[in-house]
Length: 179
Ligand SMILES: [Zn+2]
Image 1 (spheres, rainbow, N blue to C red):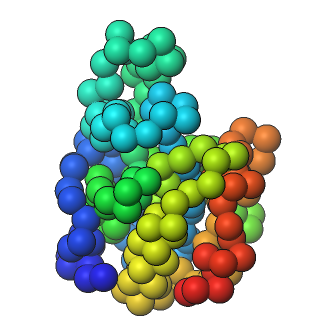
Image 2: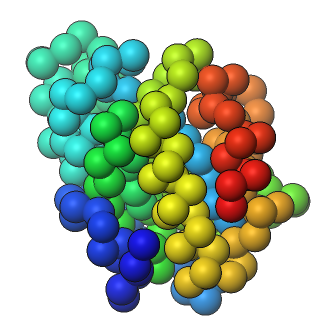
């Protein structure tokens, strides 16, 4: 896949206002894998795009009320169908990891790229999602060589006790073996 000026050419773009500048724009050296479903365990509703754009209607579902005013984003979403949507340029700081630690460093958003897999911790991801994730990861590792196999991790591993994604359903072994 092609990355041009920090945008993945194969992705649709859905710009989010939820980002800012990295403290060191040259330091892009971690890839964080997440999951998200809105409402939980419900797929394909288009709500994730609305959420990352700050336009999730709180009255549309009881769960959405709890997200009112929450301002987050990720660089990229991989839907169950394999559709790719990019929200934030890779050289900008998306707001996906929250309070987080990696090898003694905090604020992982500063130096990481966040990818959301549409899914849930305990439901298998789709094959086409893995295929897309592998292609995207290879391109990111090529363009941002600070991202190595050892620097690809789960959101859960950066935020112990607070986050669990992408959960036990995510097949790390076959993903990493394909890179
Ligand atoms: Zn997450």
